[in-house]
Image (cartoon, rainbow, N blue to C red; front, side, top):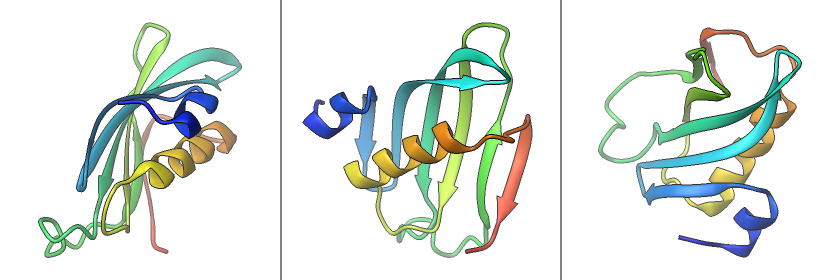
Length: 105
């Protein structure tokens, strides 16, 4: 799957479905270059709407240069603009720490 906007942002889209996406992108974390391995979930998708889960970022530090991160947002569906915005959010989040960080919109 390729989209010029994703390519321009350096995002490699692995899978895209209305309720979830998986993608990779380069970034920096704790002063070093990393490759984020992101799973993005649409928390307001009809298949998940009954769950009362707050928005979150969950970072699981790994030993290599690839860092797995899960992001759950209060959106109805995952699409290319949501992937792009999530990539921007991860690249700009300066105080990101390991663990699960929740917030309400």
